Image 1 (cartoon, one colour):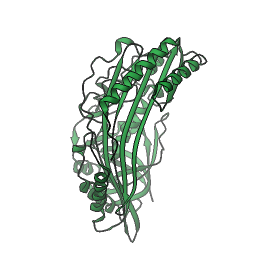
Image 2 (image 1 turned 135 degrees about the vertical axis):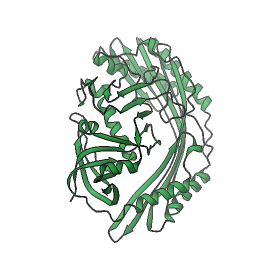
Image 3 (image 1 turned 135 degrees about the horizontal axis):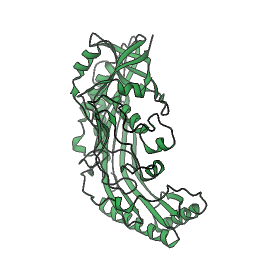
Image 4 (image 1 turned 90 degrees about the horizontal axis):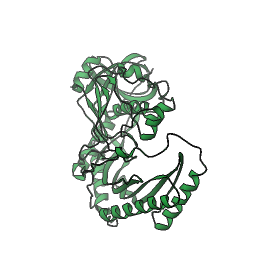
Length: 446
């Protein structure tokens, strides 16, 4: 069994250590300082072919100190949050700041932007899980998948459960903290026929263990996904519609967010530089951020600068309405922070949703992509080229699995050519979306 994790005590300790580090930074001559501290504890088990492979009990902590001496910045960190370690970390950060170049954009976010509303967002749900129970759940998951006829062997099932505390404070007097938890269970299986072997997986993930799918359901779904891939062949080459399954469509949202992130913009490393206000998507498509959503995977009342998070609209009826900015990137661009230091939190799509059947009927002939491979995305040009696997669609019906092909296009053209969004929402991560139908891409197969 894992050692009991007293989240309240850890929170109080980290808050005290954060205040101590800030006070020390002031005494050592820093004009401003900010401190982030965290501690996490969890259990992870993996099983394979009915046997236990690994059991891991983890406990990680860390503290990072950033100080500003004028417009010079110094940063140092440690995995030890003891008083002696904090002394050394702060001293090192101040020494570094004295030797770095000046950066007019460096510094804390403005004091008036600090979070004042710090509600409990229902993201902390500890799971009093013994090692034995964790193993039993993983074994049950794998066994349910292995029972399916046609499954040849297992790549294993894994369960992880963890909780932690994060604290952020700065010399404006802001001190914010949040407790959180995350639990997941996954299974990967292998099937074989005369054409060869195929593998696939399924998983469940949630803040609250009560919201996890049943282990047997995860194993059975992993088996179904694996068996569906048997008999795969290469598709025809051509310009075809592509339906991105919900499990991979979230990646397209991720590419968009990378392109509108402040760091990419001020480095001129994005195909969306200077595009604010332009139409990128069909007018029926809106992309929102909901960081204060209760119980969601990325909810937080403050960002990594201590700024109050807020609802943001990044795409408003097809138009690029906002970039995603931290205090630093906003200064570099001459704009205002959007409360997104550390990234976006809980992205949601507002659009008319259609059934998978309706999207397939509209595409008529093309490919349904369920897996993507490789990193062929150029953020500067928007060029997109990925290895893929999935299913061939003819006359609006799935015909057979396909593999060993490439899909290629340009993200801007793909966004503009978004023809529909499915109602098959994947809600296991911080991006909630259904399948995306893109009107045309280059499919390179046989």
